[in-house]
Length: 191
Image (tube, rainbow, N blue to C red; front, side):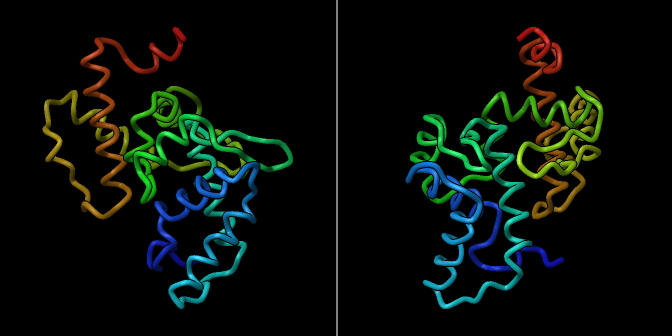
């Protein structure tokens, strides 16, 4: 399996942007987003470097993350539509979004928190039915690092790796929890 981030116009930002944009036109499907990505590639003279099924799988994972952040919502029969929050976020980030943008939303942070300890491991994603791996170990390491008094710059992972982002997200969540004076899990249980 190839890493899509190695190819132009197939990074996580591009996948999420395709999903958000097709949803602005009404109810959409993964095939609609796949067609949009293929059109983007054709417009710059690039072939589709991997099979449709691989890109469809990556789109499904991106769709689940956007759904967890309430930027998209299910619309029956595997379809989805954009939410008002999704429209605002797309207007604020017309070049696309990634997990760093999604972390602004409490529902997405709760999803990541639940994945890292607020709920048993192995939660199934909404659209793929597969177990999602948001880099739980690195997130927990970052969370613990904050409580151990380490600065954000103590992140031990290379800046261009997903583990770096997961560690940073854990550290930032611990800081936010500390500022609120309670753990995020406790706040979620209250809701």
